[in-house]
Image (cartoon, rainbow, N blue to C red; front, side, top):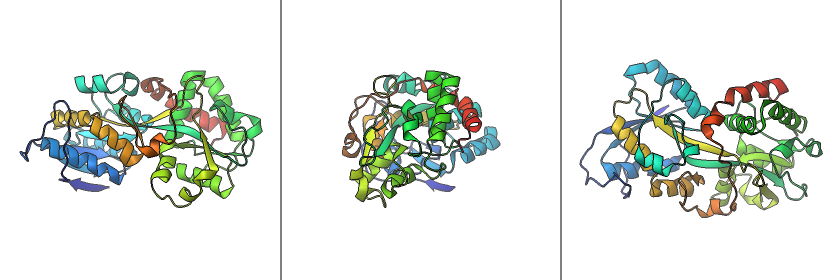
Length: 341
């Protein structure tokens, strides 16, 4: 873990309830974050300059941070937990380290399906988990997540481990849509189509297409969009050979992964914590999620960066993610039962 305090840079943020303070200190806010992106530095510095509130930040693995907050209990200095994926946000809620909050700004700007039912967490950026394929070898790519289990793709599919949070949330969404039995059949069918045992991260799946080891893979969109915007070794120079499909466009829509946060259960600076979450829902912060980290904004109507826009428009799955989160234990059970390593 690393501790970062007092970030600073000149910027101006326009958001209801947040106005520049000409350097007049307005206290602090302590953020525990498992987001590991250097581009987020701009988010923090803009907030500091707009409010005079000093950000103190501790970074680490999501499970590590949740365990730390539990161990600290009422003495925890944490005001906010930021993390990636619905499964981890729900894990934090179940661990009792978050609290419900009231915010007219968040209620108005963050769509209801991207919020926890009890307002313990909110989504601030999204990534779609979609199908990528080798354009030369695959003439009829899968059109849906369900198609990944079709025997015609036997020996072609590369995918991440069943212990991966992105995969757990995707399967949980399929359980919510299809029911447990159909989702189990799907998972077993995908296992039968593996080109190799699950390994590596999303970028490794995409590189598997370049190397010829994989014909069809699942990846979050921002890993590929990053290779459009900047140089990604082993991927950017060969991305023209890769096609992509936003799945289930005639039905549920493409699955969305969430990055979000909530106010800590024993936040010593609760008011400042809510201000920071409201800032993350501002137009400027939302645009920076897209421009700085190739993500989709959570707030409707905010423009996309060129790298994200190049992937094209699509229908997202607007299933309630709070309901999906409740299916994550079932998803993990299914992965274990079908031998999805």
